[in-house]
Length: 389
Image (tube, rainbow, N blue to C red; front, top):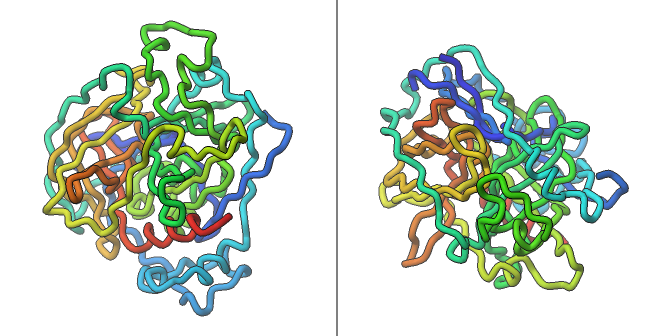
């Protein structure tokens, strides 16, 4: 069977990934600018280990080298704010939606895209047996217990709307007043082809009331966007995803994450965290053997329709790797389909939920999901965008 990435976009099922465009630069800081213009993810299956990328030391990195060699993991883990900023000087401007662009009709038109790859076989590079399927369970309305979860909408072409899932995360530099969300890298950019998405916006607790369920189409925005529509003003993804990401699962999937900064739609200065009533801290380098994961998202492909928030209690994760030199992905049993890409994976730390990964890839047959292991590279990316104005 063939493999694809989930949303946007083992030994068998096709994988899909959430929709995203990736820039050719090894590291990309995306800054949005307001303009007059008006989303989903694929999944990938394990393939033979990817060739080792060319390396460049942080000390030698320069803006002119952004389209060249990919820094090694050891170099990336040593990067400080100056190193990240040096790479980020070659910015990719996000086309920000005009106010009111994302109405319910456009949101309903947003579909996941599932590219298909040739058959690929996993190799013994840090892989465990794939887990058994666990049925996704719909979360009861209203979503008062899950206000930090929501949907990301974006355009991957003229009048081509796509969708992912995302989570409100805590901001290290602005405790209690975060405007940051966590999602998949492929919900921001296509990767090595360099396509970058536009009109990106986050809707926390989409359809919390249930008024959009069963084909209903309410006219009051509060019925489908209870906390408003928050445009993305800046975003960052990993050097690995921007340089290597593509339509199918690969070593780039092991770093398929993104952090986005949003802006208050009413301009009243109230943060996203204050508006929804909370945020979730990110737990980096979490001990795998201590995790019991719950994944949350809005699957859109059949048998789901993208209107309901779903949950999978996946338990302890297993490992999936395309490149043994990189941290293996986390894998759980779950039947969520395309559209769930970018959705948060949660585990309990010190008695409270913390985000430990996000949905990246999975089989089209929808028996399991895989997400990146969040290491020091992911932590550095969050720290960097947290410090940006």
